[in-house]
Image (tube, rainbow, N blue to C red; front, top):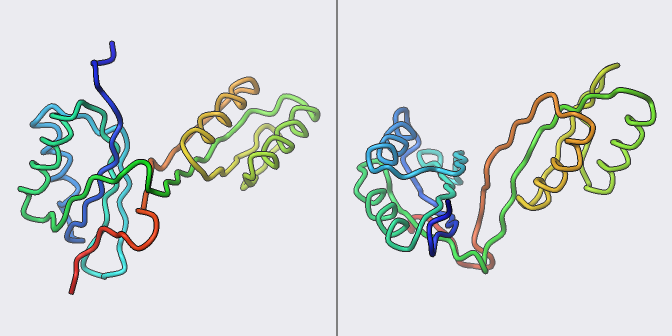
Length: 172
């Protein structure tokens, strides 16, 4: 049952790029009883730093607590709540779809083209598709593919950057 005033918030954290940092962040969420809806982590423009983009669902108080607790972690350099109205978000999914007949293969390839995806692997019984975009686009494509039979699915989680000059980075 959804909690009243619950919403999804995207939080970006700049962290030290070393072993154990992801564990520390995930463990903090576990200890506090917060749930991570999605998380993506990767290196930044600075070799010794990484960027974590986390999607968290909760009310305002919960989101504030998450940010405060993240800021207390030693390996976390900077934490920012991203303004949903002023960000660019992307997600990537790989979807392996069952092919029962030639017409199904043709239909799926047409859908892939419409969604601006790519077929990245093909066999006699399946197609593996890569699709990139907003979560709504990925969700819509997955719903469409369910009618053909999804064999396997992997999603990256959201990654996001603020629009324009605003950025989450460490000043030198």
